[in-house]
Length: 378
Ligand SMILES: Cc1cc2nc3c(=O)[nH]c(=O)nc-3n(C[C@H](O)[C@H](O)[C@H](O)COP(=O)(O)OP(=O)(O)OC[C@H]3O[C@@H](n4cnc5c(N)ncnc54)[C@H](O)[C@@H]3O)c2cc1C
Image 1 (cartoon, rainbow, N blue to C red):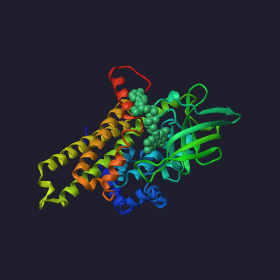
Image 2 (tube, rainbow, N blue to C red):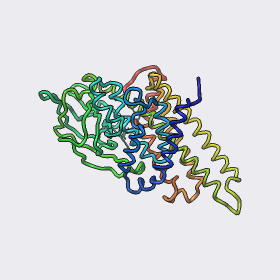
Image 3 (tube, rainbow, N blue to C red):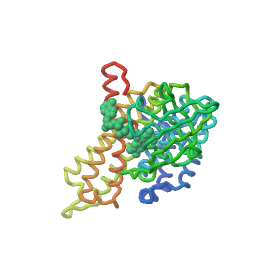
Image 4 (spheres, protein in one colour):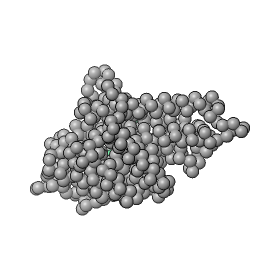
């Protein structure tokens, strides 16, 4: 067991810190207010190979693995949760292609996702379900040399941005996954949701109406969709943990800064024992969450089965992030409620963690199922 980062990982962290300081922190408020990540920032992140880090050994020259991508998302999220989410959604589209795609599909789609020239999306959720794959009703049928997809996908991150989308649909018998291009014939964005947080990255519904894909768009085999979904989401939970880790580290820094600067009755707030206790509680929580996240990243890099481990980490890290945000919020007193203060944004961003990649209630069902030693479909 080795808890230290390698020289290369430390260099990556350092590069990211400089990049965030120069390129993201100065525009984080603008991203929040305008609800848009500038195109040139995406180009710069592509040049730095940030979109390809987990798959790098195979698709470009920077080998970071999942420890690398965890460090990337953590650093990006300290500056902007939305920017980190954009990168993580690219990973989420790339993961199933990396795990289940054939060489042709990897060449065609992964290269573009890894260099950032295509923005990825992953569409599972529908109006009737966010948790149960058996309830999916959008469907694919074969027509000659093509699949024809019809249906509506709800809450798809970045699905309005040009690029590549992995879609789970019913193929008549069971769930299958397909790789397609966004914004082509038969693909329509029907609603853009106004979210509570993570402003800068869009959340939309898409309608597929006679959306035609060549037969070689099928990922894996017909009926592999459920397995693809479970394995993709398992790694997706690592990305969520990494983003929440960055957000809570940022909340801790904001709480420390505020406590140091604010005077109450002429005394520094840091002299109050109650404030010290809150700061200590925050530090304990951030540290525990960090090591659970890094451990999960190590398991992914070792290609171990992480379906239960990722649920455990996701529950702990996202719930801890919410507790840290609340403590940091309390340290700020009334100013926490004012949107000029970063803690207000962090609290809103952090609340997402407990919902995405399967709600924490569903994660608890996975952990309990594993504990009770039976496999069950949740
Ligand atoms: C900002 C944002 C981004 C998102 N991005 C994407 C995306 O890119 N792609 C995508 O496909 N989806 C995305 N989603 C959707 C999201 O992943 C799901 O909506 C989420 O997993 C929960 O689904 P639901 O609320 O529809 O839950 P439902 O399935 O409707 O469940 C309702 C309630 O029942 C509980 N529940 C359900 N099943 C169980 C169970 N077995 N045991 C215990 N409790 C259970 C749930 O916890 C929930 O509280 C996004 C959502 C948000 C808010």
